[in-house]
Image (cartoon, rainbow, N blue to C red; front, side):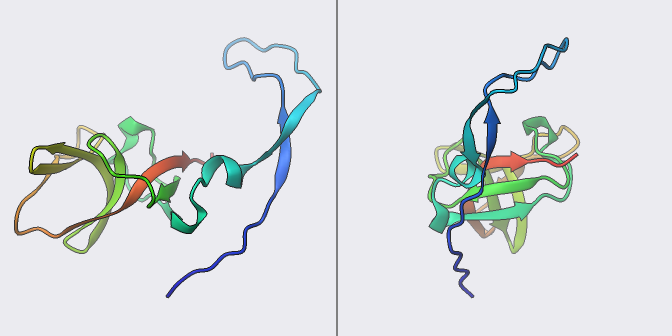
Length: 136
């Protein structure tokens, strides 16, 4: 089933001042511009999809349980990319590691072992993770 979406624009205010993560600073009331999250997060609309994370194998990469991933199929998966992959029918998000012909899917949590892709395993890369969106 193909999903066709009509592009929408939702422009929200972007304030010119940065937010202090240390000591508080006076806030500016000046709006610098507006920002459209579609423009910021989705660079290839026809090749982009969203998926919600379940589990904690990628916490070292800043990807947590419940995060929403923006996955871009137009990006070329390279060694070091975080990818959404299907391994023997199981969907996973891991860091891709390649050395010559050898391929691994690497977790970013020491509690999980690397997954070496062997000849008898079916691997399909669905796309490269472009962004992770977290709700608190």
